[in-house]
Length: 109
Image 1 (tube, rainbow, N blue to C red):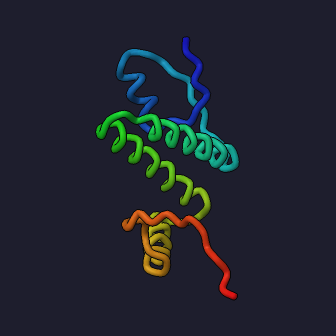
Image 2 (cartoon, one colour; image 1 turned 90 degrees about the vertical axis):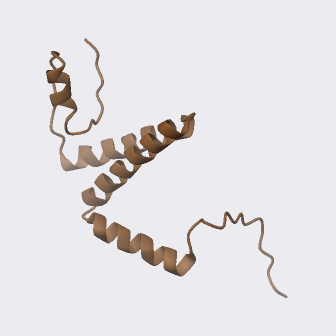
């Protein structure tokens, strides 16, 4: 027996059962779900940072995006609303395409 105690994707129990194994799952409360999504976000970010090739990078970015979508919905926002805010911020402040690194700002006299 392996104890995981972590949030998993919706089809994981089905996949485990199809492999001939059994598993125990619980449905989380909204409060616990939010906490576990936050933990999952940290886990996925660490996995992205540790990725050593393009295949791993794209997989971990997709996992991070799924967690972000879940967090948005947990806070009452649709994916469309999230994208609208993202686009609005991009329009106002830009993206990160130019790779700008702010070193310092000097006050005018």
